[in-house]
Length: 472
Image (cartoon, rainbow, N blue to C red; front, side, top):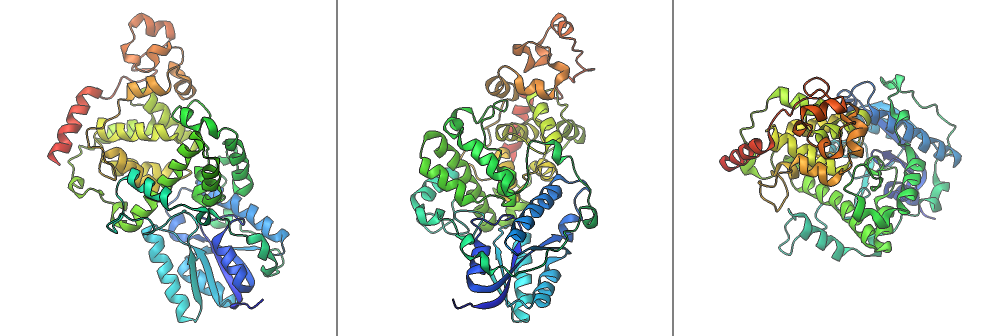
């Protein structure tokens, strides 16, 4: 075999697995000796709480990957610092002629990679990046006029029309593992050594690493046939729970999309549609990086939101008086996870009922979600706020009570997170303020003491939201 490089680095980021890994494949196939590296980025770490679950998830996933590579005679070199300094330093230290990585589509990551590539080029080191975290990227799916799609359904149709087995083919990394550079095992920095402490991740129903992802996927594969009919009900085990694993790349998007596509059933194809949403939001962010901080629909950039801080705090802490919204926010605060239907309801309530700028909510989710992804979070919030990529006009406003009655009719989800009102009958649980004094007393509920009165009236706020958007 003829090699292009004697030594190469694989720079891991949001792709913490070995199987079906584009950068590993290309590096191993073209290089005599390959070393994997991961940099805990100081610029990112500085903004996080010291017990951030995501750092814990990454650390544990890295530890698992490190052990897997060590079984094959290799290792992952884990460092802390700024990648623009550390990657060129490591390339020089190890005598690498090339650095391989998988592409990231966030504006800051694009700028970071361009800077690293430039610094490497000054030293004569090649920089190769590959598509890995999406099925179709950047401008691979365009309209007939050669423009990016800004509405999901036409994008989805074009995506499916373009799809063929080649796009879902796994990279055969195992075939080339002999080209890992043999290394004595190197101790991994502890969380404390990178400035963090263990989080409560161990108490949550999620296992980091590729093994954790594989176990979740195997479980979901047995349930996928029912996905379409149960996915909107937060008290039912209907979704995949793979979002954090997709975010950190402990499982391959190609593997998941291939499974759904080959299954072809109603549930599988519905779920494939959710995976296509990921691609859609990533290409939106790539084409419109300004949307990361501004309204995608420019006419809504300067909406005059009142932005009452006390209402925002009530929403964030799960005490708005609307049980489904409060249960959703308590789920987020407790676990770092929120069911997708509830993300839409909670976001709509903040923007359209409480009249708080969507960016406030977006930042809150960014701080708390274990599966936080800039493209998906921004896209979802702008969709809910009617400032983003959506064919529906601004007067789509979720009614938090009817959503509760429809998707948690027996109150199982609400009771899990709002035990203070659990004794209310099902029909009153969705709107406790409609209960009589006698009904409240029978359930042991004191509104305004045990559980708050609604902070706003939905009908009133709906009209105010419509007026706010009409003014633009």
